Length: 50
Image (cartoon, rainbow, N blue to C red):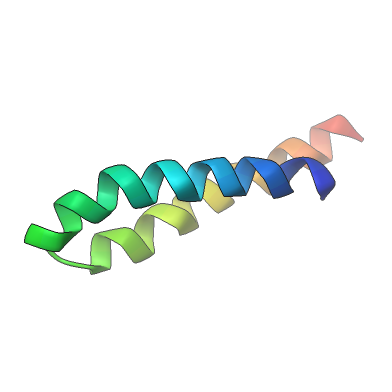
């Protein structure tokens, strides 16, 4: 869980910078979907790591 901590931070920062600009002119819903999609692969990776 410690590994995905910094990863989520980087992803959130990247998404906030890139998505925020697009979402501002489009819809905020896309932003809510992006973090969820990035969250899914993280737990899967943890399982294979064990």
